[in-house]
Image (cartoon, rainbow, N blue to C red; front, side, top):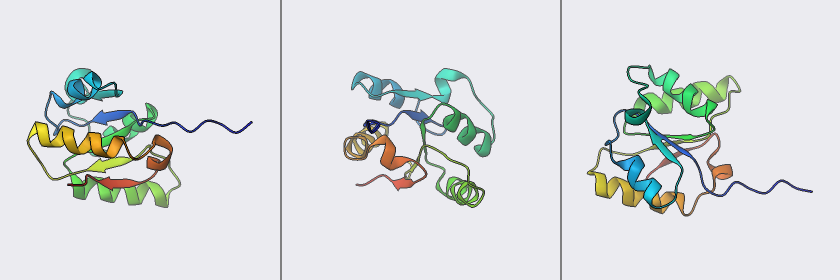
Length: 120
């Protein structure tokens, strides 16, 4: 029997993202955690992506350039991540609105090894 697709991505928000975004997403029944909550401060971008991948979570960041480079490096070496979501730095409410828009139209399976720019 084929495996059921995973509909909603889990999210891991890096330390650049506003502290309250993960909590606001959880209020809307999404699985989201922030570096601010886990205390994983000061890790390199590569370590943050590895941590998110270990948790089978997509990583959300405002740090576009560095994570695009990491994405390419991971693909080149055959490593799997659960998605990277990037966006320009926005106010918390707009960040949440854009994340919800993406999370409600892209499944966790579709997000795997992909980079998404948050739509407007």
